[in-house]
Image (cartoon, rainbow, N blue to C red):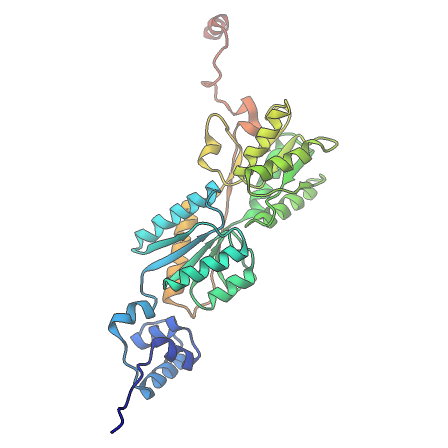
Length: 355
C-alpha cells in the first residue's frame, strides 16, 4: 500500500491564497481587531477548507510577533542620524521591542541589500532614517512589511512618515537673518539628502517673500559638502553676508572655510545650521541652528510603526512636527552674551563698571 504524505500548510500560503499580507492573515486567524469583515471571512474560510493548523513553534515568526524591528540609517557617520538612531532604539526598547541596526545605506543599492538582510531576519517592521532616496522602493517594501519613513514628508505617498517641517525651518532661518540686517543671504543645500529639497524650497520662497534674491549653492550633508559649497559662496559677487547651511555637519565645513579665508563669524559672514546637534551649542562653536525635536520624533516613529504592525489595514499616517530656531553667536555675535558674560577686559574698566 502506497504511503500517503501530507504537506503542512504555512501561514504564508494561506495569506497568498487569500490575497492578503501574512500579518493580516495572522491577525484574522487570531481574532484580532483591525481586519475588514469580508477579508476576515475569506481568510477563515480558506483556512478551514485547507484544514490549516497553526504551528505553535513557528507562530511567533510567521505572525511578525518577534518584537524585533529593523532600523536602516543612511549614514551612521552623520552625527544627527546616529543620535536619531540611538533615540529610536531607546524608544523601541521602552515598548519591549528589540532593534537590529543597519548603519550604511547611503545609496539605494546599499539600502536594498540592507532591507533584504533585515527581512531575512523576520523583523516585525522597518524604520527608514533618511534613506533610501527611492520612494518607489520604500513603497514596495511597505507592501511586504510595516514601514515608517523618517526625514521626508511623504504626504503624497501611501507610506507612514514622521518628519520635521523643513520648509518652515528654512523660513525661520531667512526671517531671522533678515531681522539681523542681512540682505545677501546664501544657502548651501544638502544635495539629495532627506529634507534637503524642502529646506531649499523653503529658503527660496521666503527670500522672494522678503524681496531678496535667493542664492543657492550645491552641497551635501557632509563636512566636505559644506566646505565645497562655502568656497563657491565666498567667491560670489557680491559676497554673502550670511550663509544658511543644510545641516550642522556641513556647517562645520563652512565655518572652517570662512576662518581659513581670514574672515570672522558673524562679523564678516553669519552662519546658520540645521539639526541642533549637541556640539552646535558648545561654547567653541555657538552655532545658530534649527532644532529638531529628536525625542518626540523618535517616540512618534515607534508609536506609528507599532500601530502599523497591529492595524495594517488602516490608512497611512503622516506626522509633521514643527521645528524651532535657536539663536547663538554665529549670527548674534556679542549681542548673544548676557551682561554677566560681558566681563571688562581691564581692571580699570572693572573699577569704572563698579561705580
